[in-house]
Length: 187
Figure 1 (cartoon, one colour):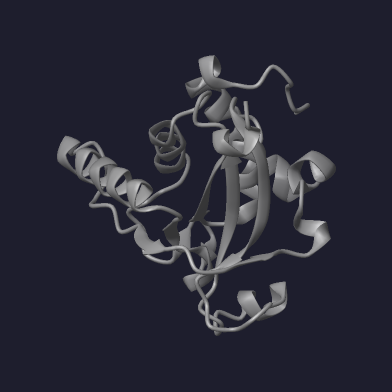
Figure 2 (figure 1 turned 90 degrees about the horizontal axis):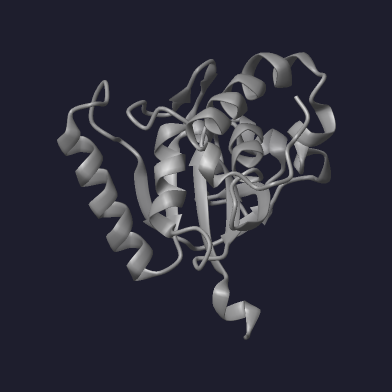
């Protein structure tokens, strides 16, 4: 079996990429999660440039997964349940275009499924408002600096990780206990 045929990639932004990265690293079927920047107008932006809000980039993670183990719909379910997709350019205390809720789809099938899932979620009326997540075709991804990669794994004792990331990861683990990788991150 050709393993390249069993891999799919999606690029997601939902606030700080450290939080999203930590969540997807625990999801069974996810092969790789890389933090970076997408959706802007500057080539190879730095973290400082993106944080300025002037480049148009979002902090994102590029999630590579095996669709034979985890469906794209499950990837989206996790995405929409682990951040607030009803806020424009804000997640908690993180404010600015770089923290927007965004899905950069890599295929038309992903786009179609994304729009269907958004409609289903909006139709439930269970959210505090309508989903404002930007849905756009993937163009370019710039990998974030090395110190951003595996941030929670490497910095779990730092206050930001304990106060912001850890509770999100714990909630994810509780809500998706049957979908977790066997390897647990230490909290």
